[in-house]
Image 1 (cartoon, rainbow, N blue to C red):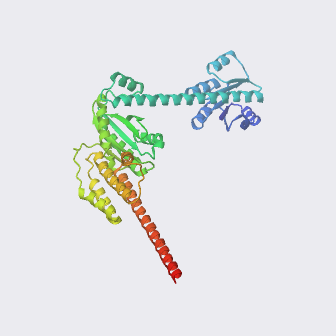
Image 2 (cartoon, rainbow, N blue to C red):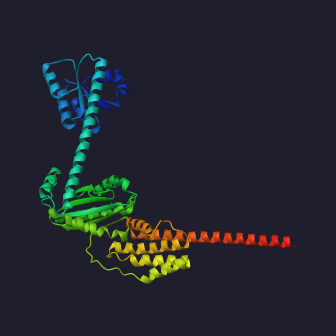
Image 3 (cartoon, one colour):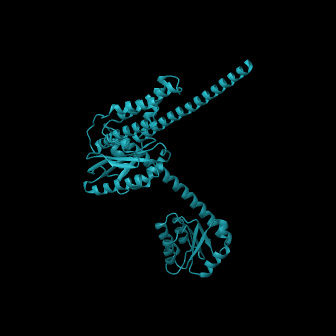
Length: 434
């Protein structure tokens, strides 16, 4: 705690400062002021937790000083000292809720007890203030969550939306634009999703918004703004893009949905963001994009690439398999208007062919074909990006060829051993006959 001693008599200040063992009672810094005016100036430049002040001083009195301090720094604790105890002063001291009133001549014990009391009161007030702040924050987060839940629904409870907007102090009824943004946090980074949301919240500071964590990997923002604030929105997009693509502390991608002019149709902006978010399967992480309406197209895939891949497995031609994987990836990558399920279906078939060939050539990892396909479906479904599907296929192919090489080495060793045994056996028979 920091203490300020105020008295127009230097001897009183020096005496108190010298006689009290401040560190032992929890005081880190002791400051001095020789008038009420000087004390006010110091309180503006230094943190003052406790003031010990004479009541009767030339110029500003201790009572006037305390009133000024109370107005600006309500948590600051005040201890009065005076050589003249008058009922008027006592009444003022009670009204100001001072923690101590000490008569001159001053006793060290009285000062120490009053300071300890002030410290205890401050700590209690600070604790309760922090508890209240946390409760207010939790309440605010809960109300934002409840509001956002209504905004993403096509059939929303209008009364509930208005009630929550009013509670949060938002003036969204008169805003001309509503926009939703969704950020996906990779599974490896989602343990830090609270930190990610706090960092993103700073990017949105220039525009009125709410946010909430929808699930373990998704953070949702809703913004409301006027048509003349389009530049502000662009700045928000830029800041979030810089955080996601430049910082790269976390694996994140994000999309800003289309705008709507009706708060009760905010779900349309949200739905457009959900649809466009699927395209990040092609784009990958570390990107933030804005919704663009595109017509869905059919998959354009050269089936001979699949045949080439299967032939490479049967021929045990590693280079040919790698080339097939590469060509498949580059054919699929530009087709971001195709449903993700179609692309994942291609990789499912490729991996299924690979595992089937492995079972014929080496051994089976799975109890049955159905078990194998069930596990494969689950694995493909969990993949977030095209690059991830491609990398996984490449890894499995490498494992396949490594198994083939190991088998070849083992077979060669077995042949050599059998050859050695046969030669030794023939030699022994020859000696016996001889």
